Image (cartoon, rainbow, N blue to C red):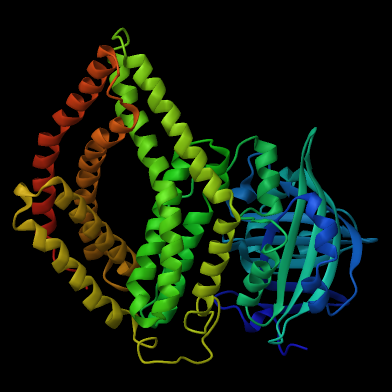
Length: 541
């Protein structure tokens, strides 16, 4: 049996158990890995040798019925909370969940649960101080109403891993209902009881070889709200990395890499559904940030592990980049130009060809993200982030550290790195006006890496100075990005143009090339201004 519990493995949140009379009140941080699978896979899953070999209890199936409450304007949702009543047998439990994070299917949330007498909210049982203050509002209490329900059968068993870690395996099959609308639920939840987080990912990785699934980034509550509103979550943008000055280098890596994984995976569902090109764009940004973080910290970790991951990250990068290039080209070049030349022979055909190429690369990108190779990469990345220093340091207090580099204070680690990136950037400034197209592209990569490094470590330095410096870097990056998009126009047009194209297609192609070329002089001038602004900024480290 494990000594201790989840509270021993999680840092940064209030955990523990409270008691009130004969009724037990749970206040803890829940850690669980969510896997979405097809109902067709269930019969094989339940007979899977891996599941049988790790089971420490017999499977038990029971019905789970939950009612989720909120105000008409969804005040609780906007406050980052989910409030539900759940029936288990003849008993009802009131649960409040909130805070935490989700990345690569791993959800960390604060949870407070208490048994109540009947199927009605009991606000006297809310023990968490922040939640109690929120629910103290009489107006909020009066407006609370049922919004949606979850109704499913749950099959549970306890898993015990070779290292002594324990997790509850839950297979949920049912539906989420909001009025006349409903969506199916078929997922696995692996909730860590005690022990090491990486065992959850390793179990999923071993299972993936024979049972296909996807890592689920949304909770049932989030899916229920989406069903009620009829709208999906918007594209996820990068959020600031929250480092602390007392962190070591390995702790900083865990925090940074997990932030990047959350950014990447949070846009996956929207990208696969093709609702908005911004999901793909944000996935690529998240992936670029993740690759940058692995590169930054690779000197203190195994070179073999980093090279293996980088190979797979590069594969994903190429798939997403081609699709993104065509999104930008069609929406920001072909589209605007074609509206001014609607009657030009060949423009409509060129637009159609470009649109088909865009669809082709978007399908390829979606195929890559839907593949088992992608899910395997996400699991291996998660294991690497958790165990790179043999610590789950961004979830818990380190037990021990090995190697002086791992224990280097984050500011001591970051300062020479940032200075080196700054020198790399400034080398180009001496001949900025005469840089060729390939050299401008190389500068763009250097500036981008410097900006990401500055953003990652900004939290442990004076904020005003860091903000000014990063804004100056962003100004250069924006200009170089526009120039890079213009440089891509000829390359992408070559993919849709043939030697035997008619005169109309050649003319349409020439107009788009001319429009793109007309932007270059203006952007070069703006680039010079942005560079001068950057050179005037003092380093903040």
